[in-house]
Length: 499
Image 1 (cartoon, rainbow, N blue to C red):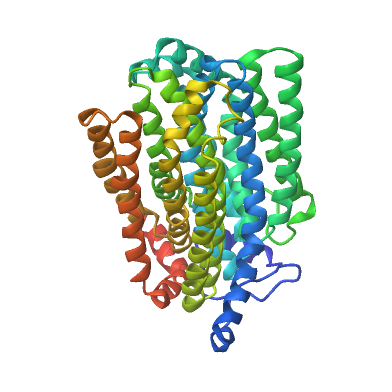
Image 2 (image 1 turned 30 degrees about the horizontal axis):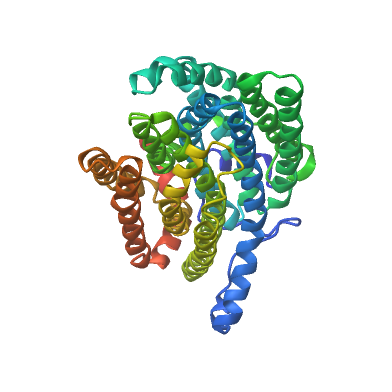
């Protein structure tokens, strides 16, 4: 452990230092070595795949478990009625989705900072960074609270049907405790993930999923609390995640990276906030994109059936999306670890292996959707009209899943490398200057309805953004990025002195 004076001085530095500390016992390092470059390609792919799946495997399980809580909630609501399904769908996909995207994106700043700190063996800084993230995200939660309190009038203003907007507003108020859990759970997850303690995240997620299933059965099937009871269940399960991960962290699970609460977490908050904001904008512009699709569909004729069908497709897409998002996290950690260790070639090779692996998985799910397009909506509804509408949308769902097998992985590279601000501009241009107008044109201009809106947003926004990210990643100077990662302390120290 560093000395007390060393700890204080180090904690005042917002980002990383040049020199590396000595290796500590109990920490697993997965950074690459120069010797790895001399091995055969097959052997190198195998080694990198093991490093990647050490992170991705538990991350997939934990993310699917967490998202399954939302799916279970939506499934319970769907069997209460079409109105209840639409209200839960709007609340989850618009209100919670807006909030979720921003806070998750802001927390992803830790993937850059903690990942590079871990690669550079600056273990103490991981705990300081996490505490800074708690502070920033909690303040952000307070500012976002009106989103939940005034959900009904906002949804009406956005053109949603009155009955759906009213019930969605009631559901949103019930989810306020869930809202505040994000401020603590997201940083905890990234703190543990960056130091490769992914197993505990998976186990705590399993426990939370079990609690959610039990509480959902009690509140909906036994206590007959209806859609309100369905919404309340999410509060229990997500706070189980928070307390489980926090308990592991402070009760000896992270002896080198958690040294207790420190007033040093309040220093360098402005620099940290700027990086968090860049991360938040980058990720939430992606997350909000498909929320806009839901809102645009709500303005169509016969909106309830179209909204139910699209919400089911978005739920299936979101469920499968947990796999690419796990690769987003795994790639971000691997790239940040390698860059923090000064190994540009290792970061480049980690990117290639991650992208190819995710594409193979995406192709598998593309085939799965195309094979079971008639049956995949039965878990959510028994309405024939909704089932037929979902069947018509299945082709677009399959292509969305295929594109999303590449794009999040490349975004993970951006997070690991610290390119969040740059990618935020790309997302803004592709999604909102190309995709949304094209979706509007095809949906209303060419009278293609929900299929036109979705097709325009996929091929006009997501495809163009993915192509640009491929070009940027292919042209990256990885050795230069590695040098930049090891010079971060001097850069941010100069900024702090000027301030």
